[in-house]
Amino acid sequence: MTVQQRRPPAHRWLGAAATLAILGAVAVAVTPTTATATARTPLPTPAQGQAPAGSHRDAVQRSLDELVRADGFPAVLASVRGRDGRVRHYTAGVADLRTRAKVPTDGYVRIGSNTKTYLAVVVLQLVGEGRIELDESVETYLPGLVRGDGVDGRRITVRQLLQHTSGLPNYTALLPETYETIRHRYVQPRELLDLGLSQKATDEPGETFSYSNTGYVVAGLLVEKVTGRPVREEITNRIIRPLGLRHTYFPNVGDQEVRRPHPKGYHQDRPEQPLTDVTVMDPSMGWAAGQMVATPSDLNRFFVALLDGDLLAPEQLRQMRDTVDAPGPLPNSRYGLGLQSTPMSCGGLSWGHGGNIFGYSTVNAATDDGRAVTIAATRLPTDLAEVEHLLAALDTALCG
Figure 1 (cartoon, rainbow, N blue to C red):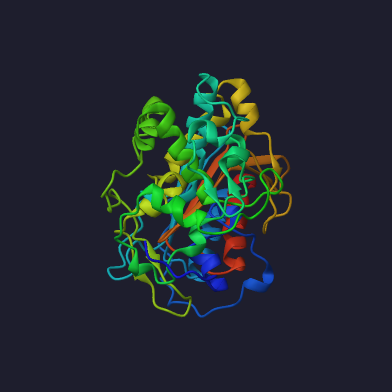
Figure 2 (figure 1 turned 90 degrees about the vertical axis):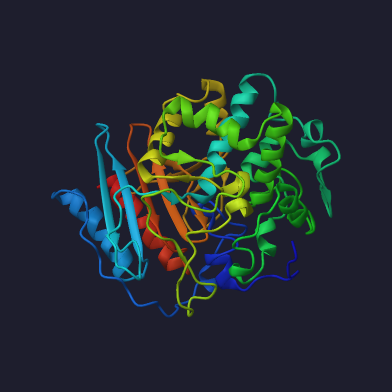
């Protein structure tokens, strides 16, 4: 892949090649100095929400309507699961800016870095089977592969890959500034790794949290080496099929479509540019770090099942929830092994991940008492304020 070897401007760290840590797709923590007010694309009129009347339900709907009205997201859709297991769906905006079509209830969206949690589950299942050791070096499984400026796979552990403490530089920092140049380009996982390794290590292994999509590419390659099967197949056979997630999938090589029904995803390289429909794209630039597609309700079902212990043995789930400080825009956020914990305004912790990929942004979390919320927007956030608004809507749905 031909790339420009230079640091991207601030807006790209917010809304394109790398995205905010709290949304699960970032190379660096965003500070208020990099978040600036920008011109907005003309706003769609909020569509009628799908939730019935009620104070909490009305509050959730209002928060989604405001994301469309004030922030200019073309569409927002949400699925909210209560403690009692009851599920409610919400929509706002329009699915298609040209036709003004209604947003499909619980439609398919690209879930970006939520893919990391699925991959981490597969790795931890292999740990439980005795086929991988969390504190063994990457070199044990992928000899000679991970080498670079300050990077040595003999000094990086599997745990550090999953916890973003490996020091591996983020390949997304070097993606081309104009997305259209790679939108339909198939990228092999080794190309992503080579792109990451062309940069200097961010730190010594185990020293600090530094979000790295490259680390999850290495974890994906490790899974394929240990199992002898594609990551896509392992996630499907170990998670998607056993849980009956009929609306979740890892796109196959060459699959650029999103299954129907779905709202269209939009992108702009710069906030002042018009939005472009990027629904059809090759998601291979995300691979094991961010390629999957799901509906909001299926994503909630996955996280609830994970916290309920349906996917991992108690020891592996404990390891997954063993967290380190994850500096970012949300205070007191911490990161385990492919799983992030965040304090809620109503008390207690929520567990989730979130994910951004061109055209779609998701924030999501679940709790130990069975609550779960996923909110998906059909454009990447362009500044810190928009991220905060998405997270506030998530908290409203969890705590209302």
